[in-house]
Length: 198
Image 1: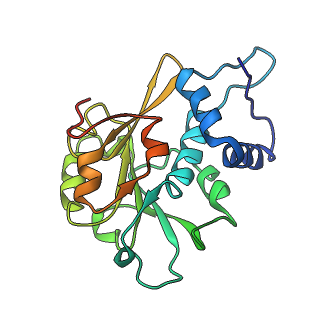
Image 2: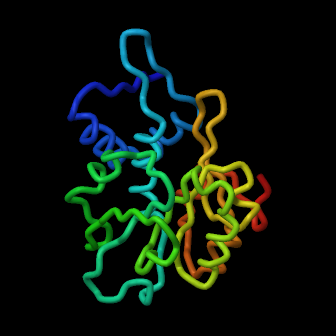
């Protein structure tokens, strides 16, 4: 199996370019497990998740009214503690999806969430994801999390890491309710049901 490693500032370009050119091949590798050798530092879980967040922007369609103007950026938000550090900012820097720039915003509470398209709900919000999701129910925001019952509570995409394997679970019904279309190429990488249970 291929070995992926991170070692210097070039890692951002490597992962972004690598997944940009062969996203599904590498995603399949993550699905099967990430191998690292003793000679190379391990890949940080959140570096991989950051790249997936970036690519979700390209494989989900939002209604036009989700953007205030034709040139409004695509906003990736984080609520709760930020596990990505500067890495997510590096991943999206200078990138565009459908001619829209990508920006990262961090929120302390839901009152700050104005224009947002992808919202990562961190583990620090583990006691309140259901409340956050409920507040977003009428908005076209792709909710992404990693807590055990995330999709059962109405979240749309859950990262699952088991035995060094990264998987996705997608609640297609929640996405449809929010007027979001998740493209089939992404759905093929995930476990999906209309009423997802964790």
